[in-house]
Length: 488
Image (cartoon, rainbow, N blue to C red; front, top):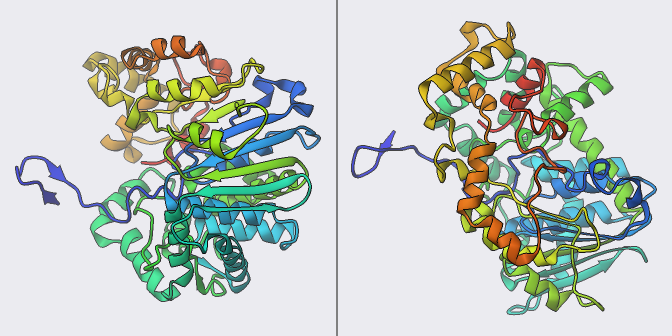
C-alpha cells in the first residue's frame, strides 16, 4: 500500500491507462425502447439519434437492433466521443460493420468482436482492420486541417466524420507503430495480472460461483474473448486498436468485456443455444456476436446516415449546425449523454441539449446518467443511513436470497454490496436534481422531467413497469448474474 504524505489516507496503486474508456462499464441499452414509447408507429418514422458521449458503440448497436427489420424511415445517427482513441475505434469499427463488400456477416461480426474486446487478432482480422485504418487514413493526410472524410456505401447508407486534426495525428501514429504482439502482450499482462493487484482479483473471484471463476481467469490469461478451450494459437497479431502507438495497454486492470452487456441477456443466449453453464465468457462471445450480426443485417438494410465527431459534449450542438447543413436545424428523438453530468452537472447538459429535442415527437428524450451523485447529496449512500435502516435492508437481502448463498460464501464486502440493491435511491436522487437546479433548467428550455422512466430502469433489479416498487423485483438467480457480473 502506498501512503499519501499525510500518512493518514491510503492511496492505492492504480494499474493501467486510466480515462481511456475503450470499454463501457454499464450494460448496453436500447435508447429507443420502441414498445414503451413510439410503438408500431415507428415503422416508417424518420429518426435522429445522438450518442453525445458514446464511448464504444455498444449502445448504438443495441438501439438499432431494437428497430423492426421492416423499418423504412431514414435514421440519422450522431456519434461523438472526445477521446482520440475511442473516436478512431468507432470510425474503423463502424466502417467494418457498414461495409457491404467486406467478409460475410458472420466473419465481420467476429472480426469486430475481437477488435472490441481481444488483445490479439488472427491474420485475416488483422489485415481487414489494417485495410480500414489505411482507407480512412487517406482522408487525414493534410496536417493542421480537420480530419474529415466520408464514404457512401450505397444510395441509402453513408458514413461521415468530422474529427480534429489531433485524431488524424493519433491515427497516423497508430498506423506507423512497430511493436510486436509479444511486446504488447507483455504490457497487457503487466497491467491485468499485476501481482500487486492479486488481492483485488481474488476479492472479485469471491463474488463468482466456482464454475465461473475458471472462465474469467482464462480470459485474463489469454486476453482473447473466445469460448473456453477454443484454440488461440492463430491470434498472433496485436490488436492495434486496443494499444497505444507505443504498445501500451490502454485499459485498467479491472476492465472487463462482461461489464458492457446485460448478464441476463447473456444468460438467455446461453439457454437458447444450449451452451455450457460453466463458460460465461463463451456465452458472452456468442451473445455479442449475435448482436453484431443483427446490427449488420439492419444497418445494411436501413436508410442510415452516420456522422462521427470528437468534441466536447457542450460544444457539439454548435458543431452540428456548422457541419450538418439542412433546411432546418437538426433535432433529435433521443440524446444520450452517458455520465457526463457527474463532471459538469445536469443543468448544463439540459440547457444545451433540451432545445435540440424533436418537439414533433412526444417521446423524444434526453438521457442523463450519474455514477457519483450519492457522494454529493445528503442521504445518497447506503452507508449514510441509520444503523437500524441498514439492518432492515440486510435482513431483507438475506430473506430475498434465501438459501442461494451459504453463510460461508458471504463476506463483509459482498454483504454491503448486495444490501445496496435494497436501498431505494429515488428520494436522494430527486433531491440531488433539485439541488443541481434541474427543475429550473427544464423550465428555461421548455422540457419536462419524466415522473417515471420509459427507456431504462432507474435502478438495477427494478424493471420499468415496477418503478414505483421500493423493493427489487428480480429472482435470486437473476440477482446473482446482475450483482456479480457487473463492476466490483
